[in-house]
Structure formats: C-alpha cells, structure tokens
Image (tube, rainbow, N blue to C red; front, side, top):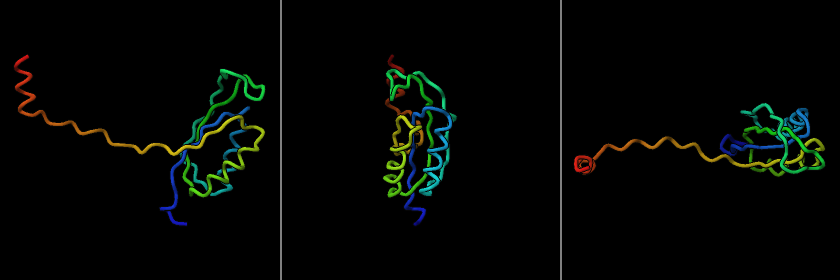
Amino acid sequence: MHDTDLKDYEIAFLVKSEEGVSAISSVLAEVGAISAVGAKPAELRLAYPIEKASSAFFGFIDFTAPPAAIARIRDSLSFSPQLLRFLIVTPPPVREAPRSRRPSVRDARQGEQR
C-alpha cells in the first residue's frame, strides 16, 4: 500500500455512552486507519427515540484509510451494540480564499458617478 492509496474520511456517530467511542477507535485501528482529529463526544437530546434511547453522545473522528477498508469499517460498526447511528463521508477539499481582485478603471469610474 502506498501513501497515494490513502484517502481522508470523517465518521460522525451517535453512541449510547462515552465508552462507545472506544469501540469505534478500536475498529479504525484494526483496519489500519490513522486517526487524525476527533472531538470529545457531547451529550444531546434526540429529536426522536433511537432504539428506545432519548439521548446520545454525538462525536466525530477524522481519519485516513485506504478506500477498500471502508466496507470493513461499516461491517464491523453495524453490529456494535453501543453505536446508534454512524455516517462515513469524505470531507470536501479545503479551498484557499479567493484572491481579492484589483479594482479596474471601470470600477473606479462607476464609483465616481454614484
């Protein structure tokens, strides 16, 4: 496997308790994913019950892994009893701020007329 075979991903999840995050981290470690950034899960009240739970912990983890590993991650997490929901996405590329354009002579003339 080459470094060019790796892609960036983000997994967002709802778990029943904070200990459920360790289950996600262990699955990522099993497939050789490199965890980069993660936020401490925050408890929130659910809009509707999921598996009879009215509250859950929401968190996310940014990681790098080969695309072939994503199917194995999904399969492993689908059977985790601590996990209520999860979603794996590829984050959009970070774009640089657009350069400010220099005012043209035409813009200057329009400013004078106002």
